[in-house]
Image (cartoon, rainbow, N blue to C red):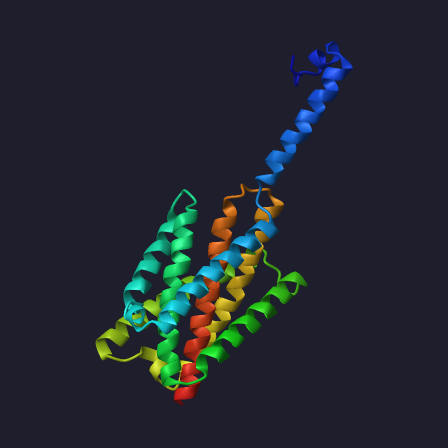
Length: 249
């Protein structure tokens, strides 16, 4: 006979049965809690996704046949990112595919920049890791407070920057140029992009922290890891572009 969650019924059962049921309940609670999102579990997924990203980048860097797929891979990665972001269902397979395809794009575009400006890729990687480390330290120490006001300001800033990027792209297509990035103010626009990408990392850190604190389902770790990966890629590309502007001048 199994125990009941009704306290009246529990008092009617022998103590031995109640003790056994308590052990079963404890085991069940342990299983349920292990299915919840954790910072450690998210960190493992982040490490795995970065390994896949680097693998894709390594292939694109060393194999010319893959380098020609830079533009197609960019569109595929964008499509996957939109699908993952707006899908009501969390899709780990799509997240994994995004990491590999994005890695191919990163490797191909990095090879091109390295060809034009020798040494720029290593500097961009160091700059990305240093900036991310600084942001994580600031978040961990509480120097950056991710509250509703910070989130609202960042949201409007990101929307504005996305609008600026779209307009700049259209202008560049019509003028056959890189838009504002080809002018004397290009470094300023590039610096703004780096700053926005850097501070967006704090939103990703907060999502991971709050998700674990709230005990969200473990599958949410995939989406949190994906969000951080996207921001890191964005930060790297912004730093790469900013360094290219400085090298060009």
